[in-house]
Image 1 (tube, one colour):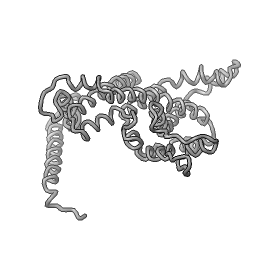
Image 2 (cartoon, one colour):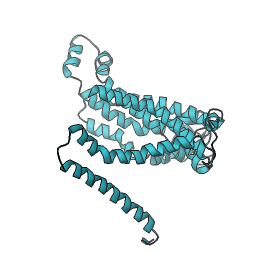
Image 3 (tube, one colour):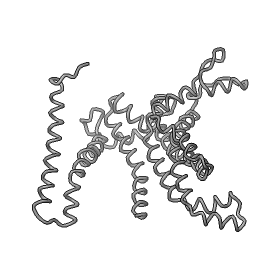
Image 4 (cartoon, helix red, strand yellow):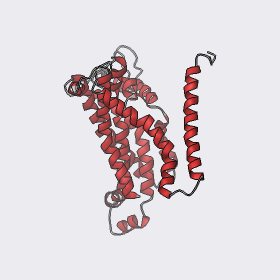
Length: 321
């Protein structure tokens, strides 16, 4: 379809207005810095002004708008007070989404970090560590939607009298079992979705932890061996304490990303069979059912859940700095 400049004129006009306004701000900043000596703090504040302006327009104002909408009805017009928050903690599907989100936030970081740690410990000092790490990192090159499609085929179900196309059911049938609908039975289906998330995130943990393990001074491990410590004892008492900051960073990063999980759930189950999470419930309420207030309330709850992890990470970076 050819590009129609006439029909797109309002959008292009808005874009040009935004570019012109940003250019004007930058020009005023350069002019202010050029006219005379400016104190260091004032100069830093002036230089940060465009970024702060964009942050306010793109993040702060929408956040405040979402908070305000969480106290309104489905159309976003009538004030309903805390009704949306009461619904959120009394509705069965909303509670299921909250339960699943907390399960994801606990199990995915622990499982992916544990897999990445074991893999990193095995290959960190190997001659083929780059190739080995790249194998585990490959799933990260796939989008979450792609990962969901891959694992949906892994769990695919067909009746026993027909040929199986799902890898897991094919293995079950090969060993004499009956095929199952893995993504239907709750709460086990949530664990099967979590496996797909761990598959995509374990490589991230392995790469960071392998670098941390290689940074552990060789003198420490060598001294432990001379003292008669076994490899397991050396790993538990020397390596793990040395890489604890990296472990914490990996866990926090995984937890923050997992709380926002949406794509895998949407692709594999569509939130059915009690597999919904907060991000998916937010999408359904706001865009499928037209309940803007409920969707905004779920967004506020998701923000509150993410905030402690982000704050802890910021404090840890400041202490490190």
